[in-house]
Amino acid sequence: MAFALRSMLRNVAKKIQVRGYAEAPKEGEMAFTFAAGNKVFYDKQVVKQIDVPSFSGAFGILPKHVPTLAVLKPGVVTVTENDGKQSKIFVSSGTITVNDDSSVQVLAEEAHPLENLDRGAAQEALSKAQSEFNSAANEQAKAEAAIAVEVAEEIVKAVSA
Image 1 (cartoon, rainbow, N blue to C red):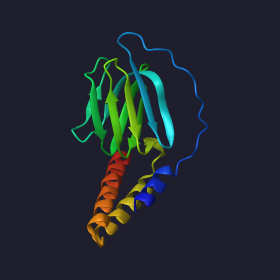
Image 2: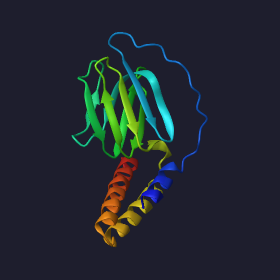
Image 3: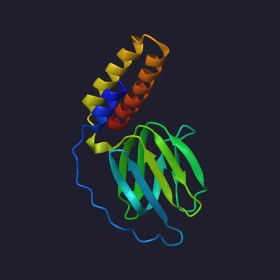
Image 4: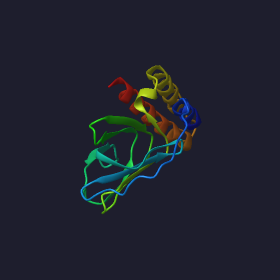
C-alpha cells in the first residue's frame, strides 16, 4: 500500500533542476531550505513566512522564531515569499528545524506542489487504503494501512480546499 501511495505521489512531471548559490541572509531575514527525496524546492532562499503541519499542531514561522525541532505530519506546507507569492506543497512526513540564526530546514519524505495532485487519484488511493485497512491480516499490515489512510485523507482534504 505504501508503495502504491508513493507511486501516486511521484506521478508528477519531472522538471530539470538547476543549482545556484544564494547570498547569505541579512539580519532579520530567514533562509529557507526545503528538500524531499524527489526534489529540492528551496535552497537557502530568503522567504517571509512558512506555515507547517506538525504532530504538535500547525504553526507559522517568521524570522527570529524560537529554535524548534518538530515532526511533520501529512499536510500542506505554505511558503510566503518576500514578494507575497505563496507556494503550497503537500508533504507526507518529515522534519522541520528552525535554527537560532533564523535559518529553517524542511526535510520531507515525499513532497509535491499542491497543483500537481489529482483529486480523483487521491480519492481512489483513499478508497484502496481504507479497503486494505479493513482487510489487514495482522497488526503490521493494519498499521501500514492506517498510515496510508491518514496520508490519503490529508491529500483529499488539501486538493478539496
